[in-house]
Amino acid sequence: MTKARVPSGGPGLSYVGRPAGPSAGRAWPLGVEVFDTATKKTPLTPVDKNTTYGSGQASLTDDGVTWVEDEDEDGTDTGRAGVKRAGLHGSGPATVLPEARAGALYAYELTASDDAVTELSLPPAPSWDNATLPKLHQVAPDGKGGAQRVSCNRGDQVCASADTGSRVLRPDGTAGWTSLVKRDRPAGKC
Picture 1 (cartoon, rainbow, N blue to C red):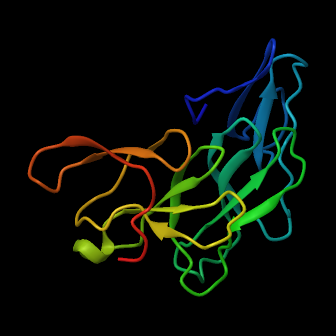
Picture 2 (cartoon, rainbow, N blue to C red):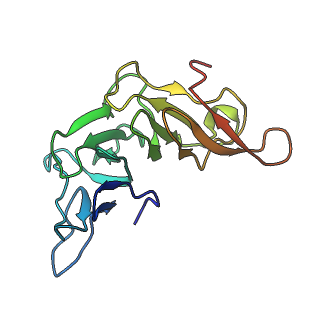
């Protein structure tokens, strides 16, 4: 399981998301499975098997599942990945943040609420400086408005947890000690 948050879909109905893997003698399916505890069915989110190289961390909300997806098998995009979203039963798949675009992010992990998707971008780093440290970005679930930085602080921005709306909780150590901080909305462009 990749996400602790398990929203209720109604009486006796909950969902658990995880990257698809081998089970019951099947080969490795590609995508994210969502287990419906009421029906005991596990639909697989639809992916384009001709372009999708891998799927990563998933996050559940009351109305859908969001996940990291890599569509570049040959590595020509230097590690960038996109963010996808679909309904809890795999319906209506959509791209939130495309992998193949100017300024695409290095999506590594994510957390989501019904109103916002927060992704951690982890660029490849031949050396460590502020420009190559992991940073959090937030975008609407439909991708409109593009990704905005959650915080303009220097240093690592990791381990985010979505709250309601666009509020994000995360540890911050830029002052020399670690504090739990919250942002009610993204900071914008830094």
